[in-house]
Image (cartoon, rainbow, N blue to C red):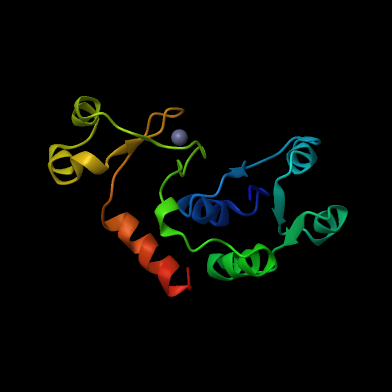
Amino acid sequence: MVFVADSMLGKLARYLRIMGYDTVYQSSYGNQRLSELVMEGRVLLTRDHAIAKLYSNAVFIDSDLVRDQLKTVDRAVRLSRDHGKWFSRCLICNSPLSKAEGKVAREHVPDFVFSNYGERIFFCPSCERFYWPGTHRERMVERLKEWGF
Ligand SMILES: [Zn+2]
């Protein structure tokens, strides 16, 4: 299951990426881009009712709240509850993350992060951001669990 979220759905795209879903999101799309992505087999998530009607593979999102948006997607396609896939994807550019080699991680993250999470530091090969567990991530995990994921 792979998604493309329209330019109104940045937060929703972020949460789907947290859950490990390949989700294309751009703040704007050229004329043909959105339909190309749908033709590739991505499920279109859109706030635009008229656009949703153009595609059989589209989910119309009627709420502004990310919690309700996720629930709408879940009702339409039944999202996985496999927490093993969470945080396996870059939240910024959507690429799959790789494990950071100890030496590389040590050079790129604060010392306390390295000593606490050395084995659990990941990085994005595309945009070169580093990821590790922490309070920000814990908050997102708690929120997802509260919402039933
Ligand atoms: Zn990235």
